[in-house]
Image (cartoon, rainbow, N blue to C red; front, side):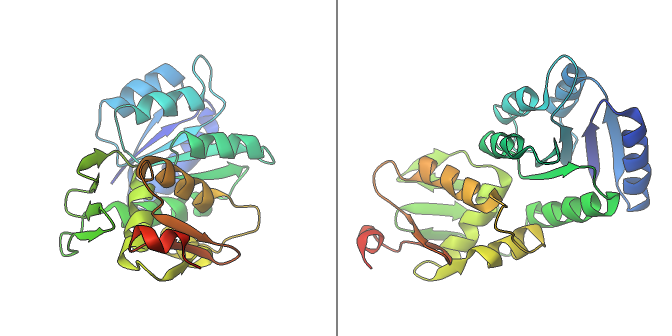
Length: 228
């Protein structure tokens, strides 16, 4: 697996590169925003670790442009305490975020958790519920006959919800399954991704219902959305 690090802190990049290589990854480092974007768009990276604060072109602009052409998983590196950076990153399509400073082992754990999810598993069959078709083999989503562009994490959340259609999937369960960590009251990751899915899928009717204080439920029919 190949990791692309985009960060202007050369010392940090060297540290992370050495750690990730020991974990079995190949690593490429870019210190300029425009060069990092070009490298990411060229393909070949299985995951991008992207700093928010970069010279020339910041991480948000890189992510915005990257998401126009690529679904490659992205972990954003944000300043500790800057909640707005995390929210903006998730809104733009980041899969996860990690506040600086951090332990390289934490980054390694998050990289592995995301890559485990994104491996193609052809043994899982397609699932279709309430006008939404999800195909794990091609990682395609079709809603009411139209293709819907989703990020890697949005796809994985949607698959869990659809395979449990009619049942409540807890927020904590999604966090542990997708991120391999427990949720905290201040972690908005799952909520933001579900919000994105709603905007993409619910043009004609609701399909994902929030069960307050518990989690989410994929509606088996339009009637389920207003029931209860």
